[in-house]
Amino acid sequence: MLSYRHSYHAGNHADVIKHLTQVAILDYLLKKDKPFCYHDTHAGAGLYSLQSEHAQKTAEYQGGIAKLWHYQAQSPVLQRYLGLVKQLNPDDTLNFYPGSPKIAALMLRQSDHLQATELHPTDFPLLKSQFVKRRYTRIENIDAYAGFKAMLPPLVKRGVVLMDPPYELKTEYQDLVNGLQDAYKRWPQATYAIWYPVIERPAVEAFIAAIVASGIKNQLRIEFNLHADSSGHGMTGSGMLVINPPFTLATEMRQALTEVLSQIGSVHSTVQITPLVAE
Ligand SMILES: C[S@@+](CC[C@H](N)C(=O)[O-])C[C@H]1O[C@@H](n2cnc3c(N)ncnc32)[C@H](O)[C@@H]1O
Image (cartoon, rainbow, N blue to C red):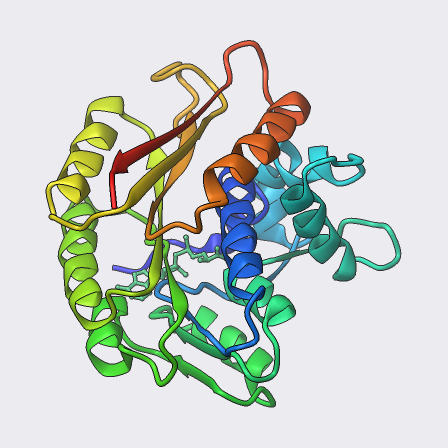
């Protein structure tokens, strides 16, 4: 079943948290000259029109990127992220929002490798068409976890894997834990950035506990809760569980998310950044 379309949700508060974390990790990898690999497991369509029927129907971006769009950020990560969004909207009107593979493509050097898997029959060709001219690029219309078997480890040693499933089915949580363990065996040096929604608190804690129990070391939890738990808003917040995080990530994300909270949050909003498993 592939009913999820990210075009309804692009630019919402969860995308802001996810893409800020992605930007911080990529900027860290960019500090060294050696090429690295960006691997995106659930890549989506790559670029989204915020004027589309889908985006306008939910208007979720209005509670995310639209509120930050003209903010003068102090945080370098937030500045960098907003700069990328502005690059796609040069006439100063917020028409487009970049998905995770597009953000990577904007940041990567020519020598860096970009890999992505996306299963949706409509979103895959949209994604693929944006990368036809890029070297060191592999975009496959296959299942994320089959993609690990086919594409990991990549040709270069350094890199990051972004895991961003839609979690429409309850089984997707366990699929991710199994898939993560498989990927980690193949590519233990990589950073893994796993997005998760906060909808029901007990389910979130069970999911985090399963990843902690996987035996994989060096885990950092970054969570942004826009609303109090179970306050009738559906998805009240979201988080990123990062394995092998850059040592700068916790500090950078605390600064960035504190500023995000000041722009899109309320007295009920919270930021939580916690190391879960030591190195
Ligand atoms: C949350 S969206 C991805 C958004 C994207 N990562 C971004 O940040 O712009 C999840 C995507 O996963 C795709 N998908 C769902 N199940 C999949 C699977 N088993 N393998 C690969 N892609 C899958 C969906 O079609 C959807 O486009």
